Amino acid sequence: MSNPQATPLAERLSIVFYGLRNAGKSSLLNSFLGTATAIVSAEPGTTTDPVTRAFELGTLGPVALTDTAGLDDEGELGQLRVQKSREKLSVCDVPVLVTRSDLPPSPLETDLWEELIAKKPAMTLVLTHADLGLHPDKKTWAELRGGVSVNNLTGDGILEFRKLLQKKAALAEREISPLEGLVNENDFLILVTPIDLAAPKGRLILPQVETIRDVLDKDCACLIVKERELKSFYDRLGVKPKLVICDSQVFSKVASDIPEEQPLTSFSIVFARKKGDLGVYLDGIAALESIKPGAKILVLEACAHHQQADDIGTVKIPRLFHQMVQSRAVFEHKREIPDDEELKKYALVVNCAGCMVSRNKMLTRIDKLKELGVPVINYGLFLAWANGLLPRAVLPFPEAEVLVSRLSAKSSTT
Ligand code: SF4
Image 1 (tube, protein in one colour):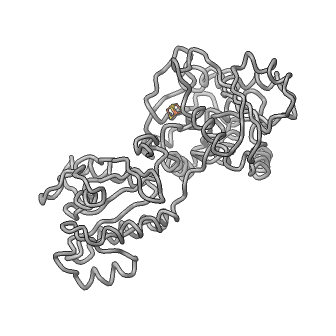
Image 2 (image 1 turned 180 degrees about the vertical axis):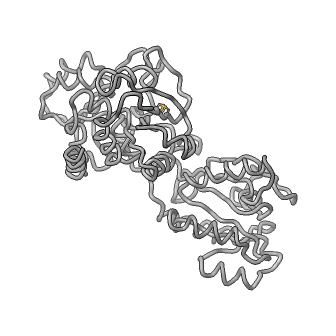
Image 3 (image 1 turned 120 degrees about the horizontal axis):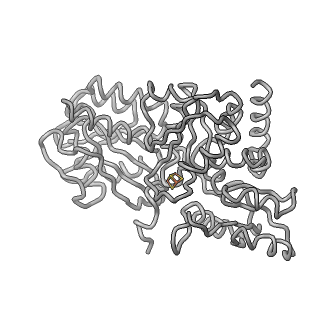
């Protein structure tokens, strides 16, 4: 039997229940899960911070279900809760608007639906409190939006809700697997994984583990070596690898130890594509030429990973940047994206690979930066550029032609 906790939260289909206070979100979550995981009360505003539970959902597999505070919460604290709920909504795959069947649709509910439906085609509507009757205005409103009715007391309608959720989830843009489109069955790869000070003791980091698993899922095989042993093993191979994937920090050594025609990329670039948008990052690379003295650069990481002495975000990237791009650039570091006014002060944002967070979270960041006109790059692409490995490091991807033309077009206009 599969272990529902085995898939990291960031890799699960993210479903968020939202709506007004006392709409029955927590009761619905409990009926849905069949357990008492969320606190249920008739008092409005019982759920304060978003609560996420891992769950297996039929054919959808591993999902993360989140219960949020009411979006009509009041007061200073209430507004903070609303903000947290909205943050969850903006990065989820399937928002579920939970509304009472016995009340007419409120302007806030209508606005929320209209605001999100354009961005989240998987949005789903559920009417709760079916035992209290169906308001005629809510009936018309819900029919137009394909909602289903659930009685939280008896559980009636839960099955229909599950079916609707499975149908809607197919509309959500899902994260691809690391090697999607990069390999075919029976291909052979080399993965170069340095075991240095930055490597966690006794294990591999998530991008390496996920890539190895994907090698197996795609019926391929791989050789896993450290950069020091690569050349010796490579020279003895009887078959040319379809692809070599290395840690970005050993790009230069790996590139010098294998033939120039050998397809090569990095774990960080593989994850930049899985979690973000390679094209936007390449636009950002082209913007490096216009970074001026005193420019503020924001290194934006996505989790509180343990920092090493020669940490990539705080030490290596700034050092290389000062040497190769602009010696008087000023670096700042954050883990959460700042507000719009603060963001506009930066000449460039450098994203980490985002391996621990969802694609939606990274895309939300990228969309915000695009909207504000702030160029954004990523660790792996910057290191590829700094080592003279662009466009080579994006050539293995199926969308390479578009990526390369984008890089060339940008370069010729800057
Ligand atoms: S999410 Fe970002 S900061 Fe956290 S481990 Fe992955 S690359 Fe590093």
